[in-house]
Image (cartoon, rainbow over all chains, first blue to last red; front, top):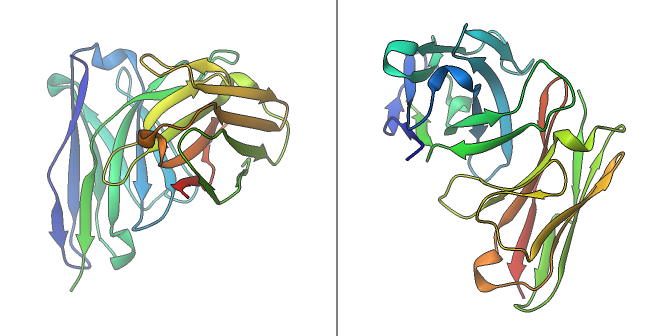
Length: 125
Length: 107
């Protein structure tokens, strides 16, 4: 079964660092891009960035460039989202999602077909 | 960055009724890059439609997508109780954009 299993909820203080994970299984990890999506409390979906596990090619939303780091560990088919210094405004649910279709070649369909259940990150002093 | 505007913000309907949700892009886009998702409270988004009109695996045929250029529509032909949720359109052109969502609530 194809799955994205995300790490558990986190409670952190402002200024702390954090890494959350997205463990994939049931498919070839290096064949599909993985994205991260933020959902602040009571709000909509925001795309943060996307990574291709095959070569770690990473694209960030301008809104999140420099604020987070997306990475992968191919040996354990896991993607990561990392903060070096959290702020209270980072309080949100973070989803990882598998992307279908080419990000580089035009003309193919593009969509997120498989989602993790989300990781709730709470940042509060 | 292309902006997606969804309307209405909230749609109040009864089971059995037809729902028509709109997604308008700030410029003309390729329909192959347009998708729709459903999100229920406490759950992750679920893919409904890709390529503007293709139904994802396991999605009932009461869900249909249409449109081209800058205007796209998600139609739920006959609302079932489990269809009351928030719906998002999404585009992946040079970057990824999500619409603000339409909440379909029970009247």
